Image (cartoon, rainbow over all chains, first blue to last red; front, side):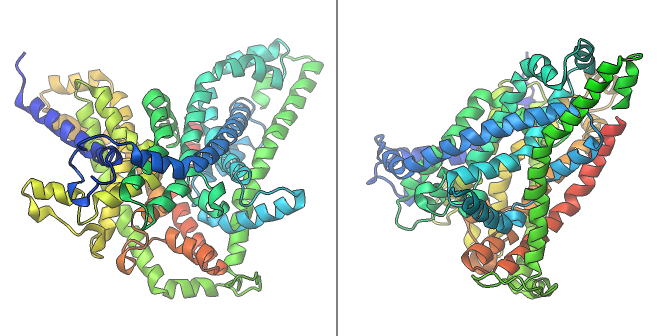
Length: 279
Length: 308
């Protein structure tokens, strides 16, 4: 088969664009792997003469406690939001109680708002509720997890509702005729079909919560209690931290969602498109 | 809900009672979520609006009502005027960038490309990393004394060297570049999904009719992608109207507030300056901008769903 020049041009364009998208990765990896002596702004693009993990070690030492905080944040925030999204999505797609059509768009609006517009009351509320219950909410990972669960409800409900819409209503009706109730149908019919929905929702929520910055920086001010993105921002904004350590740190903070993307990209994409409502 | 009861002829009295009980139960189950979102979204927005009309501009809460004074003062603040202009410039260029690049990538990937999955993942992976991470990387890539300027130098393209975000006249475009790098994969994915939904028969019919590849795209395929463009504009537009992390990590306010945006102004005013009423006023302006874009879209898409 003769290769047409138009196709060659197309591949050239695809590769050039791919190189552009990979530029930041190259810079982060390349300079993260250099020894402290070798790092130099004027030789940013030159590969290291010998690999050194010193920058990664230093970045990891700085970020390790915050990594743990992020894990402690992401796990409950993801599990709770996914569970709520599943049951809400089931009800809003299969049990359209009076007012369901009115409730759903009101829920959805919650995922578009700029969170700045709720921050001041949120801080006051967490302080007040913490005092009332005698637990630390404002300033703690637990409080931040609660916030992520609540503001995660709209998107998890949306994804599950769209997912359950593909389950034929006849299946639910048949179970009803067989005498199954609302919870019985959920447990025996809907939940066994829900695995792909949970995968999409949990990947979405893990990525969102891991990457989120505004809530985290406002709610946790003690550096020991901050999630990894806030710690990275402190590291990268610091004048005294070597820039190769900043790059190693950025790579470390990006690693979990990157791994999720590499291994479960298909589901990541589905969550992404669901966010555009008509996925 | 009544259609279900009617669909099955004469359900027994017991079944009807159970069904009614289940509908009650269904409302009860979503109630906690509805209440939580009601309080945390609508209640809090209401409280923010109240704070924005109060005199709480120091550390000590002062909730005396001052009307719209915070807003009138805000719109007269030079920094906020710059912020609004920056938001407009950022949003327009960011949208053009993402739509253009995303469409180009999608059309290229739709040509039965060898290694399509690889290329698609390369264009899409920036979506999965945080704005803080990409801000950190781009801050160094666009640092005038290193990064891409070194590449231009090595390639003999010294004319392309730029002061990037250190020059107030173009600083905002440096942030747009990073934002397009991060988000164009989203438009690519949406357009690609749209292109894959167009039946092959349509393309073949156009070719049989003697249409060139260009005419096929210009007159048949692109118009079919219009609904996708609309969705992308809404999603990306609302993200850019409330952009915060990327700018915060990459440039902050920039020289002469050249990369300042309402999100940063609000954060600093409220949590660094303890001027809560003023911060609440900025937040409300942000909310209004987003609402103008999002609410018609929500109404349109829920109505389309009900009719479809």
